[in-house]
Length: 305
Image (cartoon, rainbow, N blue to C red; front, side):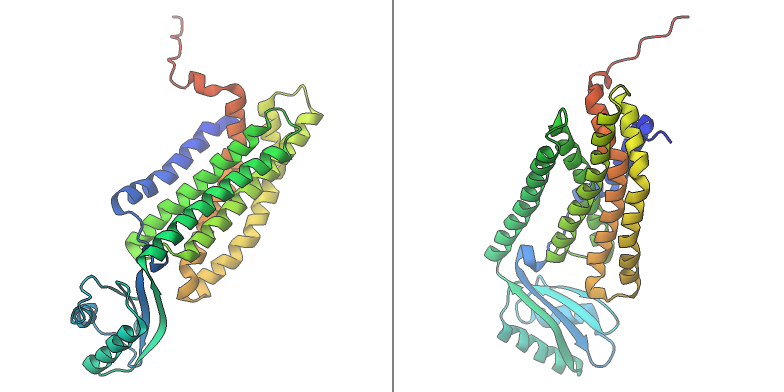
């Protein structure tokens, strides 16, 4: 199996995977939860077993001058309501008003309130955490492979493969947000950082085998060394990821709705990370070794008649 020889095919598959999500990000953006954008979020359950119409709930909130309220169902008897920042007293008055209007008993399952200043601070810290993790990973790999010629290439290649996974996760999040209303919250950030860890872990396994084989077979072409190393570790990579995949799949099917978003993002990231560590990370080393970018935009010489 010549994975490295078909590297541009696999790069193309990666591009086709990322492209729909990038288009979705451009047109739809990412809806931020109250964790990042600020505001209040209330999750309610109606004792009657049936939630009222969304428009009727918006009308109740409009009477309290909360005109930009976003209301969506999360089940037959549950509802999630997002508003500008309000306090507990205001939220209790709103619940009482709805109980009177709809003649129903309402249970507050969740109430979170974050000011806009705190939301901006959390957003900056989240972006900083991802950036810091990326830099730390690159420096660590550079140090770990310091005895190998051009050790920096391993760190950069791992980061490029990781960025592929980050792009896939963000793109799929944009699509899921569009069709399921899932917002980017702190659990999404947790899933993203976990995906980064999984992606780099698999890449390091392949890189370590490349280092080992390169020292054993010094006269062997570098491209063959990389391809052999991928094939020697591919079974381990897939088996490792399957042990994570199946429990998460069970959680998606049988778990509660509160963690489904988090698990789905993790699943997408694990699948993408397995692909990128096999078909992107190591082949990038070959592209770099051969300096193939010098011929990307050159015309091939015409064949003699």
